[in-house]
Image (cartoon, rainbow, N blue to C red; front, side):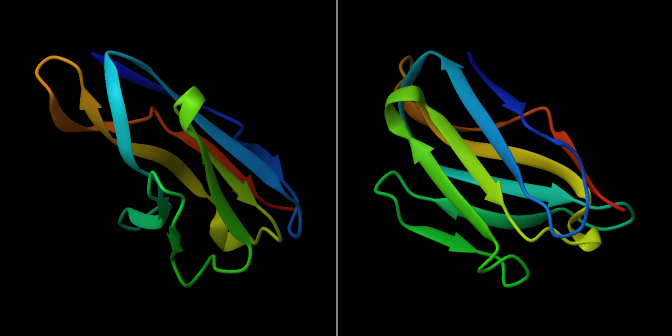
Length: 121
């Protein structure tokens, strides 16, 4: 089994910054894509951004230039640095990882528990 544990959410004023972390543990062989999604109240879940094992990242248009995804492969951890936060960034943020587990050797989709980010003055 694999577990993903998120941390770093909270309340921040508009224009502020937060950094989310998501660490995976368990029977991990390798992790391919790591990503972040969010779900705002009354809205569908949306992809915030994702990063490949090699470090190539892509972002939703709404966060380009403000958010940065990075990963530490040795720690099986993905980060989301959020700058210039806006009230419309308020949502529950979920990490997602495409994990190749050891037995059997195949890829599965795993999700973090979600962390609340609230941007308000």
